[in-house]
Image (tube, rainbow, N blue to C red; front, side, top):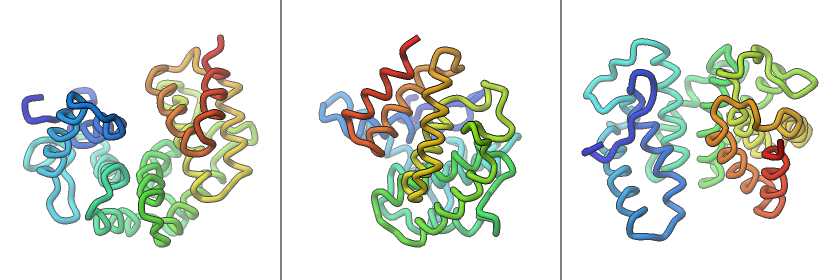
Length: 229
């Protein structure tokens, strides 16, 4: 977009989060072309932040009619996780919304989306308050995961793609839950990428997260296994 943003959603609405998700991997690439996209994208994200609040849309006040509370919390968590500078207050406001059982939502995929941001933030800051929140959230996820590694409520692949499971694996890794991590990665390997509704996004998310968890060599090996028909 002319203002540096990348819209997402149906209809387009998630400008701030989608922009951050787009420029985040480009931040590691050293080129004049990628840096221009990053600079314009981050400038847009900065313009959408007011104190501890972040607009979902590029409008002054969000007009998202469905699921806006979840999108609001997810946007705050993931934007702060990917772009942590001076975002402590934003992250803490997310933690304050966490329930006593460790969740923000009754849906596993929504809690995964929020916890991913916290996990990325912790990896950049080593903030122990954030780690405590991640551990409580990961316990909730584990309690709602079946023995085969699938999450309760899964069955509709348009809702639970492998990107969700890859993010759950990252959350378990940060929380130090090795058993749940291995169960989740095992489920990803068994399911594979073939029928995934968003195969490219899921594959890249899996590769990125596995590099964080295991390092590049094992990540490439695992990625080749799930891509093999």
